[in-house]
Length: 262
Image 1: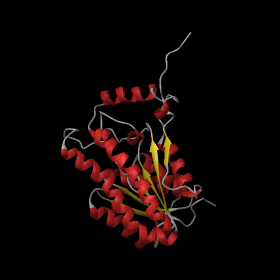
Image 2: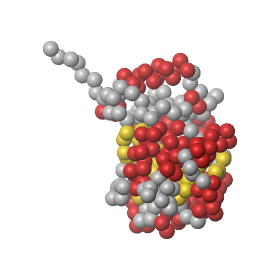
Image 3: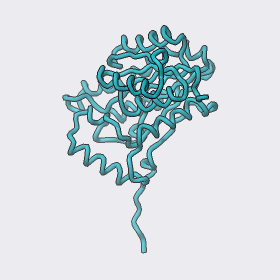
Image 4: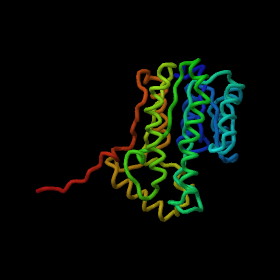
């Protein structure tokens, strides 16, 4: 028996990366899953991966659309409840670093990043709350260690994740009386396409990746599968944990280089 037999899970941004790995793992543990993405092509790839793992059609719901659009958020809740009758876990994973084609410090980029990374999470949480109260379910938001320290490269991304972290803390107090837990996962460097979609070049990505690896004590990026396993624990076994920020970063935020003394 799986840890999620009979449970229903929504995973936003599950057409690739952390979201895809999480949808696959949770389905392998017995959950029915609603997958979501902006790209029809990559969303179909996730669906085919699920089916290749033996997940049947009656355990998969698919929602395509931009997460910053309110109609997409409403459709995620409505399609899930229509097909499965309930919601046990909401995973707010969809997010991005910056809007392609605009100046990273522009108000247009600020608004877009906050709409995707924060506003959609607030709306989905509010829409899902009545259903999660019935199942005594829980919410996991995928944040970032960028929310824990300053950034000159993607300041609005870092600001949005810091706001998401405090949203988690605040809403843990609001949702506790309803029997709903809410926690954040704060990954460090993970091999995903999030920065590819933010308009940086391959050369810039190479420089960034090398820097992260050099400043991470474990000397490597994490994998989407490692993040998915952490969220499985948060969704199932961490029954007394709410309002917590779970950092999974290979030690990056603790890195403090010291001189080697003779």
